[in-house]
Length: 356
Image (cartoon, rainbow, N blue to C red; front, side):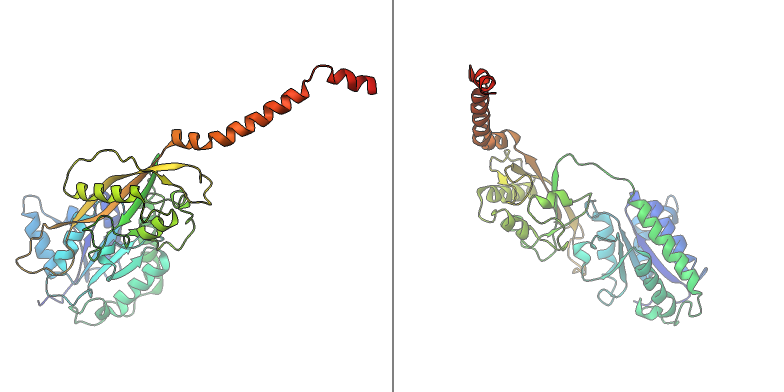
């Protein structure tokens, strides 16, 4: 598909909640070469009353690059991934014109793992903008006018990179407190879900996803950040556990939108965890679905949904934990009572006084 070369068009895909971030990224990128870089942000660039779906398709078709702003893995990204999948259908070289900007310390969405990712820190964004301005053809095979801004001042690139990185930081400033342990798993296109939650599902780590405290239940706090569900299962001897089989069944029932009874099985925390004696009941809390990503056949249904992530909450079984500690507590109480009796034997203090 031939695209006009008079203006370098960038389609910025974002969640509605990240509209302010998208505007700041738009302003920073357009400011690199005013009049030659045009960034499309749907909430402000669609005229009232027009067919917005058709206009989005039109802009996607004539864009040289799509930039996905990926701020939080736990959010629902159905529409953004739909736009990305739609964009890759316009006869593009695979992965050549899609860039995913994401929060530092996290990973880009697993459906886009093979595409170019740019962590939103100043150094990485600066490098991305530098190539965009000076070696534009590496960013988009559809651009044939050479470098967008070969003589751009490095300080201008630095300022734009700093503005984007700061905008990402502010977009994540709001925090949510979750009063329970949550394990957030990301599912890819290749994960086999026919038998339940796949062991290859990637653990999404972070304060709003699977926290370090939750990972400590599996003796895996402070790890590599590349853990899988299988790693967590093996850490608590859960691969063949009854609770794991029930959890898989509940996952499959959730996919079929069926109700299921509360789980009775219990998971015991890792051996070196500070709550090693505590039991937890794992519960399928939510399953997020999303459209297929990447090139599709013309007769494929664009609305096809597949699980993209699953959240498991771990509810502490405090009563059973207390019961499991009862023998130890009872033994300590018996020892204390014996010491008290020995200390208060009648005449003991009198004999001590006579000896003095």
